[in-house]
Image (cartoon, rainbow, N blue to C red; front, side, top):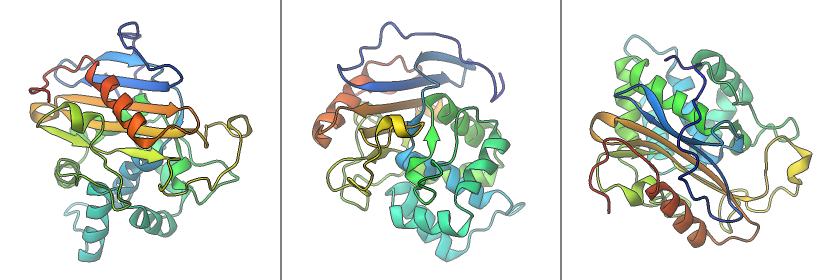
Length: 266
């Protein structure tokens, strides 16, 4: 299968999405080369911090063959990926061309439903449109096609997440709560009280292609020995949902998925 292959409709019926929650889910088994589960895998969500995967790949793209990373950038990229730091992401968004980052990576990776933020919000990297299916394609590129220095550098950081983001939010929901070891994560959260950009946008969901208002909580990453399975769970929650409630719901949803090659669960 290639990065552009269509997803088969598998496993949707046995996933109980909580009432009022909109979910987009894709689980891919790298050993068999098959998607084993999907729910609304091409539904677009605002990316929140998941877009940081595209930012780091764009930064590294033309640095071969050594892919040396200057010390200052190593510091920024480490905190951006391990602790989901927003200031680091904003630095690269400004210095690498903003939405042009997304345009370049869409073309390079063959992403099918990913796009830059709405024209009304050019500086909001967290408003990039992305899907569960495209997120799987991103991880497949990192793991199976990226030059080995890029793969090793990025995956090492994703395998060593800090418990809390630099904004104080506990980022061990979903994948990190369900699986005891052998996981990597790049999480995303937006719209909760105290999070970056909280209530900064009053746009109605019908005003732009992607819902910019509902509380969003996403868990993405890999699970199992040698990153066997790629998991992407994107969710939107009813207005006013507390972070703790969304955290629990996303974790229960992730625990119910079919994930090949998983280690013992917590």
